[in-house]
Image (cartoon, rainbow, N blue to C red; front, side, top):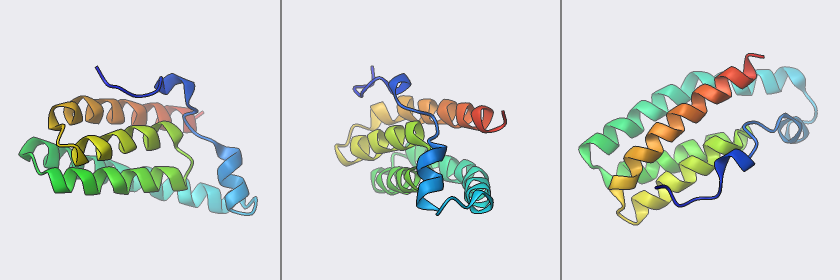
Length: 117
C-alpha cells in the first residue's frame, strides 16, 4: 500500500492558483495547460521505461520533472504522486514505484476528464 496522504483530499486542478500566477491571463492558462497535457504522456512513458529497467536515477529525474511541471500548472494530485515517485526512487523503493506509476496514469486520465468538462 502506498504511504501518502489521502490523494482524494487533494484538488485535481487549482485553476484559481494558476490564474493568479499567470496574472489572470486566461489565454496563457489555456496554452500552458495544453502544453502540459501534450507533454506529460511522453514524460510518463519515459518514467515507465525507467521503472521497467530499474533505472533508479532516471526514476528520480522523471519523478522530479513531472512533479515540477504538475506544480507549475497546479495539477495538485499529479504533483503529489510524482513527489512520492521521486522520494521512492531516492530511497531505492523501486517496488513501490510500479504502483505509483499506475496511480499517476490514473490521475492523469482524471485530470484530462476534469479539464474536458
